[in-house]
Image 1 (cartoon, rainbow, N blue to C red):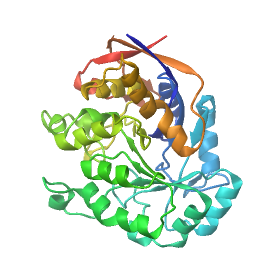
Image 2: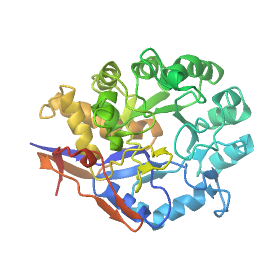
Image 3: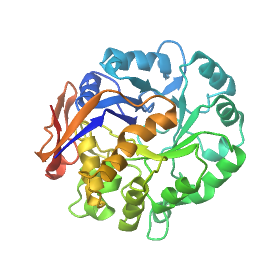
Image 4: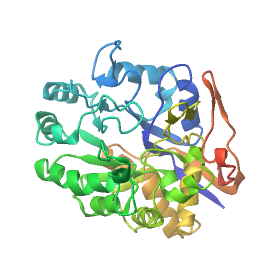
Length: 364
């Protein structure tokens, strides 16, 4: 079986910085990716809209130029969000929107994930001038939806976790204060988040990663397969079932592809495990596997429509740009993705670090 598909958009990914960036970009291009939303939690962060890179931060302008020089100019779309910090102002939002460079802003919970120490609490932003300016100018708010500064037992247990607390305690307040703010709830992992997005207004959407559609906390813990360690962490079977139901509901327009692909050349460190699953080179294959695991017959017209909606159409429609007219093909056949060698060292892709064989491959 072969699926002939429009090229897809990865609307949440990481390209980092430094000599390995061309390899990371090429890995996306090689898997039929037509465009990307490149996360701004670089070192230093993307904390301004315009101007040259400085010691304390990139600008959207300078980081986009760096990515384009590394091969991202081959994408049809490249979106770099502004990292929301205490230095972000409403004037910066208005000027960025007027320039056309600012299309999205990224919220990180302080110390909640990789390079998120520049973030600020959501409570400091709700009702404030920055969100009001974003609402006025149609700038998308990309949210890492986890409550920060929780103790271990509160961070995750059988009854609740950092994500469920965020979606029950913070998100209703955010929507009430900013009813017209366009929001992408990124890499959602729980049934609580999935139900929240499904019930929210049409200008609230969500990205879902391959790992959260495929795996559970049991897969991570059994054998301590640290290549599956990402943030937010993979959750439980009922959460995975809710995510699968969200993406396979006929006619759904709210959920779309965002891999959160995060390259690391060193996963296990002296102080813990680096968070992030690298899916460059294998993301659409993993998504196809997840849809099949959810019971979708990709050989059927209905099944292919569900898959195309999620992978190729919903994301561009939400961000307001056209779906790609270029095509790529997925073939049902056993495959493996080799280690990606970069000038910074090899990157171990998911799922090959766990010895799992792909059941789909990119077809020439």
